[in-house]
Image 1 (tube, one colour):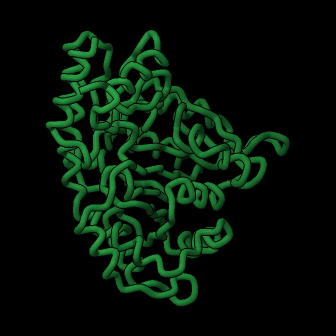
Image 2 (cartoon, rainbow, N blue to C red; image 1 turned 90 degrees about the vertical axis):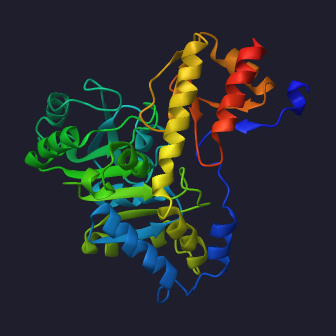
Length: 342
């Protein structure tokens, strides 16, 4: 069998999964209504369940995680404001500058001096400085955290470190938004309920399409007052989906499968161990993201593609993301191809 005829093994992201028959049936049978005019019952059920899981009074469904984050930042920031986030955070590097262009905030990255994806409280405190300052200075009203941190290899912020960062921010009068796109992964890896990882934050976003198999959908959650404002902002951004229950039904099925993420974590650990045995420099995955350092990044990516292994570059390394559409057999097949391919 030539490399061109090898079945593709897709590690590009945990968003490449496709809804299975159970999820498609739930979508087909979903009870729906006009979610802009008078509400969609299935969207409402998903919002309520997500809010409870995240430990928040209310939640709002959005088509994407980028929209969920943008809604939060738009409501927390004013033009002339600065916000703080760990270096490489999704809101800084992967949302096309919408935090600055649309929400009006100037990002300031925080170094990862406490571990991958995590600043120390001292670094945060120094960056806050005087959050109000003179009238001609940027104000600093917002801290954005990310758990897990995507570009840091799916690194988890433990609850004690999260609490320290939130405490520093709150003492200085900052609002805290948590980008929890992969919060479900952190919760499963730590053996904790998701709400244990949102303590103290004002708002949080979470995604249903990253590893859980849903084709689309996120939520942004916070106080009931925040969600009412967020609903107007969602409409302004074009997120007023009508019969959204067809999509929300997939999110409800996805939440039933959060525990399944443990299998993806096990596969990531197995994959990283195989890479290390092959002599590759690889991180120790905390969740479902494996990062490989390669001296010739583009050459290694092309070589893997020739073996039918699809990956993407991330933070100067090669990123492999395990997910529910990849089995343990796929992991072994990947390692075998690499072993025999050179």
